[in-house]
Image (tube, rainbow, N blue to C red):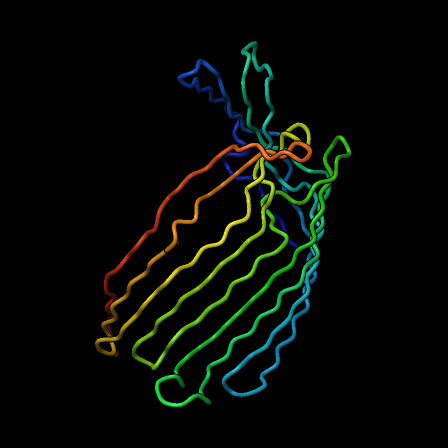
Amino acid sequence: ASIARPNLAQAAPRLAFEENDKGEVEAEAGNPDLERQEAQNFDLAFEFYPTEDAVLSAGVFYKSIDNFIAQVVYEDTVINGVALEEATTFINLDEADLTGIELNYQQALTMLPGLLQHTIVGANYTYVDSEATLADGREITLPLQSQNVFNLMLGYDDGRLDLRAALSYRDDFIDELGGEAAEDRIALEHTQIDFSAKYDLTDNLRLYFDFKNAFDEPFRAAFRDGGRELNSQYEEYGWQTQFGFRYTFGG
């Protein structure tokens, strides 16, 4: 069992108004009446080592959550006599359940000849079936929870040079709850490729280089009304890079 209390931004008795250049007023409010989240958890995991250079693992999990805290957005409402285009606050969901599986595979290809024997491959996959019930009885998938997530990795590690390429994918998920299904904002599926490199100049000095979102995958969000998909947000962040060195003191 576990307990999580609402954070300050969620529970503070605050109300902030903002007017955009179109004259539309939006507001964000905390909810001091939020209850803490309580969860009952069950996990079962298995690991198998077919060789000393490989591991296969699988896990199943179940979570039952009471008072799950979710962000909700109300369109065209009135607060304190002010007509709002949009109002954002936080609510407790009556109940929520998660059931899922996790699969993982890691392998060092030491059976290959020459430099290829330092190659590493890996893959992991998570499937989650989630359900939450709103106060009005509407059933939804759990906000911020994708149903399918997987990662693929190809690497090289000879003890001094470490190179990695990783592909990450996630399904869409509810980003913001609305007053009805057509007002739920959906963060659309996302695929991203990252690269990293590390090189040990000495036992204490390591150079590193990270290259994130190499192919400029944008963030996309939309509203779904019947068979239509209405764009809510499209942002291109471009790629990000970081490099430097780390020095470890001591032997």
